[in-house]
Amino acid sequence: MIACKFGGSSLADAQNIRRAADIIRANPERRFVVVSAPGKRNAGDTKITDHLIRFYHTGDVKDFQPIEDRFAEIISELGVEIDLSQDYAEMKHQRHNVDYMASCGEYLSARIMAAYLGWPFVDTEFCVFFDEQGRLDRRKTERTLRDKLSQLEHAVLPGYYGAMPDGQVHTFSRGGSDISGALVAAAMHAEVYENWTDVNGILTADPRIVSQAVTIPTITYEELQEMTYQGATVLHEDAVRPAWDAGIPIHICNTFCPEAEGTWIRAENVTHDNPVTGVAGRKGFSVISIEKEKMNAMVGYVRKTLSCLERYSVAFEHMATGLSAFSLVVPTAALESCRDALTQDIRKAVDPDRLEITDGFAMIAVVGFGMMNRPGISGKLFSAVGDIGTNVRIIDQGGSPMSIVIGVEEACFEDSTRAIYKKFFDCASA
Ligand code: ASP
Image (tube, rainbow, N blue to C red; front, side, top):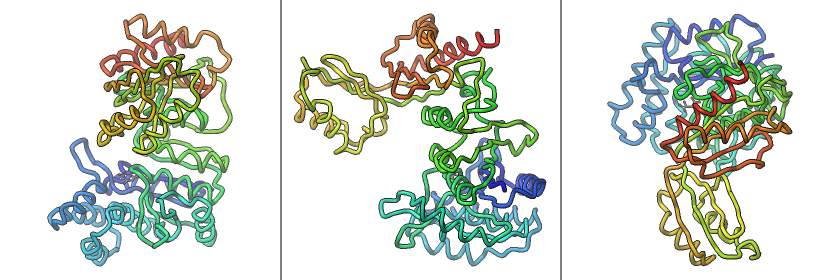
């Protein structure tokens, strides 16, 4: 049995929905289908979820109209018998919860797909559960999904949302239908979790930066997690865990090119000639640098500093330590509302000799299982960036055995990524 998930661009209009339905029908093993809300039809278009969030904020029925219009067009072009007027009326009325509003696109999309396929609709509001803090309750979710779906031959489910203990609708973060699909696959012990999207798979680098980037045929869950965390965006980062724990391979497929091989994500490491699987990176980081003489001999110095970050809910992503100084890399956005207060708090807590926050950093990760125990990788990496005159400001190697992360100034991000890519990928194919 295969569980599949179709993303927003795969369901953006009637033609695409028909294409997705053809893919579903082409293999009888595809029994449980999770759908996103209709996404963009072209670069200038607006996703249904964004329309819904806008409507939540303005409350202006004019802002709900594009949503009704888009679904009306889809329904009429597909020729399905379905009346959603009651649903629209309720949505316009129940504006008190932004998550509820945002979830409506998936709900309507799944109702339409279910009607088009002639399959049962199963609402995830009653099978995906979050706790009071909004954290997914995986055990209860998987048990409930299994109970409900085991009784059915087929089903279409909306992705992206579930319910809080008080019954209020709650969503995952954006792109979260990937997680819903993984949960269905895990609950039903699917042989494969197919994730249908609009690209041929996970690429070796961001194609907007590296035009020679190619599809990675196979990648491990761990490598993918590392790539996603560092900026690769094909799959939601939280979608990997449920499939990984259940040992279910994830197959990334292209709705617009179903014959493409796609990317297989599995536990087993396939040895490539190239020790590097991919290069990923992101901008938007700040570095908090702290100096204190003889810091290395002081017990609890770093812990006290980290407690300050904790008080302001700032998560750090990398840490580099030395004898009398250490640096923390944090997303700049996390400092937006607390920069001054956090600085003061750190000064008070640990009395540093110097404390500085520098913005404008990008982090670049070189990821690959094959890098482990293979000498010369860092040498190659640093010569790649050194050759183009990039100053590496942060180095993080060892946190994960399969990645080396460097921090550079944002202005050098694209060139450095290209230089690193060229060094590892051109050499491999030479
Ligand atoms: N529709 C939601 C979004 O636009 C969730 C998803 O597509 O997975 O983020």
